[in-house]
Length: 403
Image (cartoon, rainbow, N blue to C red; front, top):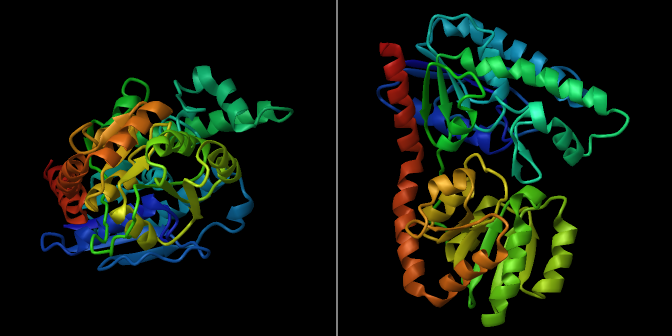
């Protein structure tokens, strides 16, 4: 079997690109896969990922892309990707687009092999890919466009033009997924959100993201209850909830700490909040190497993932499980899909600082709870190993080729 992959970026831009690289490289080492090729945009400002065993076909980004509107870049990139992929599709048994622009490029191809588009966020229904308005689930541009524009700060004199732009981008994106022979979703809740509102391919399947964690890291040695959160410091990530919960935790465990890794627009306001509600209990470490996060997480009492929006997947949930550290997450999106409450982790209503505090206190008090959740989490994490996810993709491709 020869797999032709399309990716928006060959560089290390984010988790989506790392997932695509991991899947393609995982396929390349299999004895039942003859060859793997990837066509992707070669960003000069991002270090290229190492696609072990994969033939890499770099595509130059459009000139001046950094200064163009996102929609214009979409149109240029999808054409470039489609042009580069078209000449190689004849030798492929399956063509797999891993991201939004890649899926748009896929819809421009008229090729014989079956085509697959992976959906990693809400782009088929939402022009800005988040399908969320201030932490509330969006019901679509037909009735929430005004709220969305206001929430993003795009209202004002340019508002009519912004709305026209978003609607045009939405119209362009919506047919792309249905043009594929198969849609792969990285979580069931994304597919369920689209049911009845977006035309889907005749065949769809859920295959979770691969998560590759170095579980041999040396755990940090903490002498007091310590919790870790790692994300952007932005409103949607709900770190404020974790900070407020720590105010309750330190009443019973004065030495308890929350280590916050990451940066973002709420950094200063969160530091001020921490000084107010939990003085000295929250440490902001900014952006650090993943290994430093893993070391802290491996030695922590628990990991906190307090997002208030529907995380498409939630990689940190699985990373914590793989390290044997109990994870406490919001009962939303991919977080709730990965965690079985009380079995492989603990869930709490998004934004509910009291419920989160009770979970954190329970972990501080009960070592058997920590051990039980940690052991069950390790078992659950085995469902997301790169080898397991590569096998699921190969089996899917086999079914499509057979049909």
